[in-house]
Length: 135
Image 1 (cartoon, rainbow, N blue to C red):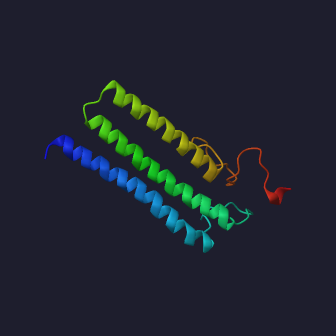
Image 2 (image 1 turned 90 degrees about the vertical axis):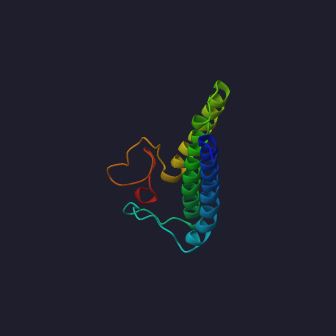
């Protein structure tokens, strides 16, 4: 077994792991949401998540993790095999698309961009949004 074959096998395993994380996450998220899953760090005075919102958060987290594994698999395969300008270009496009998806999911789950710090008062709302309790 040569090095290139080993790297291809590792890349395929990472692809499988990424897809498996997303599928298992989608399946496990349903009963967790139905049981009333609530994040541990809910801000004081915040309303509990609805079943739908809890499911979206759980599903989004599993998709994020799966995307990270798929990006890792693409990088492993592209860098380990003799890279060409075409393969590096394709990798760059794939990473850009998956990064955009990751940022979008992070915004959807937490209500803020990944580079924004959590507000000092502990609320998870984006700046300018008012909570139902403050209306």
